[in-house]
Length: 276
Image 1 (cartoon, rainbow, N blue to C red):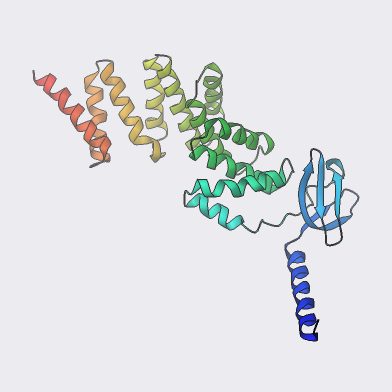
Image 2 (spheres, rainbow, N blue to C red; image 1 turned 90 degrees about the vertical axis):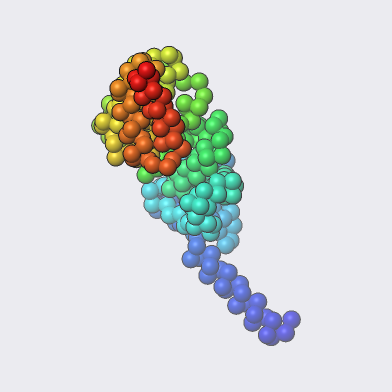
């Protein structure tokens, strides 16, 4: 090996070690001992750290997770960017890798892995797989910053199955809970309305839809569909004046949309009947 090659090799190794040092996790034991390296879940109840010298394992109860510091995965920015771009099929494998690495570790990257996998699966229509992941996120991290998004999707996913009395109770609890955000409370009202429709209780369903309009008018994403539901349910009940009111609201608030075109046809039908 020539001197130039030796020097290049030494420099490359130094750069690699420097990179590892900068990017290394810091595992802190309750005894105060610290280790720099790459932390991962090795088996249930055990955490591994791979340092420059060796790989070591420790029981969970010997680790201070509050003091342990985890560096972001190298593909962290890419993963969240893919979610923003709604490229869920490409983002899911990345978050799944994190889920395996940080599985059940009391660290923020496990929280983010649960969120990423759950949101990707939900948007891919994989209801059965997404729901338990998002529920685990809420159970493991009660104060998670992703609570609103997780609860929103859980309502949506549970309604896509066979909603029953248990879901009704959960949704009512969300509505009553003062800590529930306006967006989730509105979504819970929507969930209750859909549930009541599924068990043929249109009057109760209508009450829930009206609650969204009256109490949560600022939740824009639900307004058009909710007004359409109110109009249709009033029409079914023979209350044409109320139905006409909501159809007019849709036409004025959402002109040139498919919903407005449908509302125009139904309003025209009501007016023709009145004219007769």
